[in-house]
Image 1 (tube, rainbow, N blue to C red):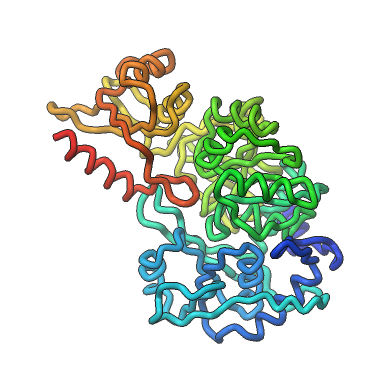
Image 2: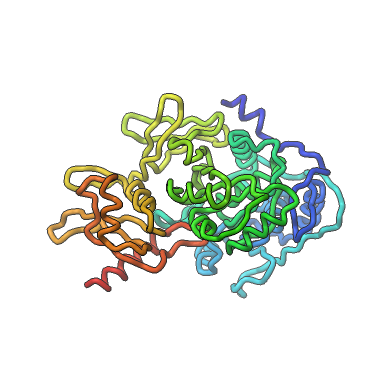
Length: 445
């Protein structure tokens, strides 16, 4: 493994004339990027940390690399909400904020990011690729966000494994992403994959279905859409042509079989999913319409001990990482995800995964969104409840679940809501779920 790591540790030498990004509709080549990095680095404040809040993806990448060349650590909050930034900044004295427009934190130092765009050509110099360059924070879906430190070499090795495993090495496609670059999924696929391959960065973050379609339609190359199940649910309803769409990538939440099929029909592309976390980066993929198991990237190993705990071993990691999910490992290295250890529930002497029950719920025709949870009954016994966005009635939902789950896991309580409090990348933060359930409990009492 060490030999493999040494072979792919440092950045790929892409020609300076190779396309890197579309910034404000104009082509930026790799040589232009490094010239911009050099000029911006000379203007940065002399501080140890920078909160990179840039929404424009090219400016985000430019700021990250410029800070790295100055030995500064880039902080990536799980949300751009100012309360979240203020909470994190207490632990990083001397940090400043970098973005295109002034944030709503007048008491903190702010640096206005602008691309030099001199048109010059330069080569990459002055960056220690093995140095700790950024700290990303988990999304809070399982509790308080926690910091995860990574180097640029980590992303370089991971990107190489990902694009090779997905067959994207030689593809000059535009990466159109609906997730912010501060989130690990958006960071990997829309920033680092283009930086270390022939893929091209798209500087925008289209949100509404027509904006996404237009970004794909007007691209000078075929486009790959990196998005989430939340966005796909909106896209499949839009009756629009997707002639220049070359591929669809999904992450952040499980893609149901029904939504995968609808995506294939409406967008003309069978979607691929990638699997990973803020701690590990992505390390496996699958095409759900053709396979149920996940395939690890090349050189990835999952090792399970006698207690059922699983560790990830990979060239891009300094040491094996203990994974939070439960897995079923196959002899050929492929695996099934059974849900988080904390998601395994026991009712009536039988066990099930909340994640699997939620997947079955969202596969029911007529269910737009939803999740399962455990509540305590009057006698102290565990009972399953669900929160759902659906036009079906309670009986219709129970009948939709009945063929796939044991009788003890059919929900006793079904709460209907207009929408779920998903964040900007489609996840349900633990705090928001608890707040929602508390409100529903009060409403029913």
